[in-house]
Length: 197
Image (cartoon, rainbow, N blue to C red):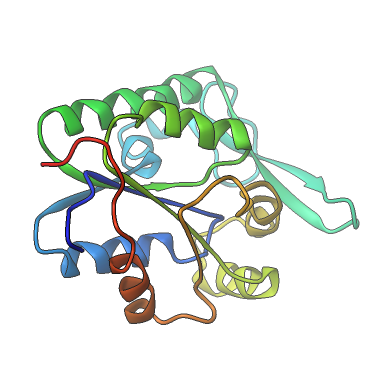
């Protein structure tokens, strides 16, 4: 990259390869980038507030069993009031880190156009690259089932919710592109405007 992005936003459904790409970028980029996402804040929450097994967590994060329009079982993320506060705090934390001069890679699952637009508004004025990462649904579901640390059905729900038509600068299919290919495509994008350090 000829100029450095202050922040690289990586969005897409669960099991799409966002975290692998973020780690590869950290190793490849010549300056240090902090990798941040909601998982970092979830790990700071009291365990008792969240239920990742299919039960109800009234204050935190939990899964809601449902079916999609074709009758397939899905798991939709339920966000309680405290979890909502945590999500909002991530925006403030990201801004604080940017204002302190850090370069960031933000790992996110925008579940609606409004979620994505909220990040675009938050990051307005910063040199930002928006990268969507996805894969075909059958690939996501296979990864989900083999990883063992994902709620089965969440990839299908997020595949339909976290679409690639939200306004990304670049969309990558991790089933077709190696990490090296993805890094090369990201490096080919020239930053536009915003602050740079």
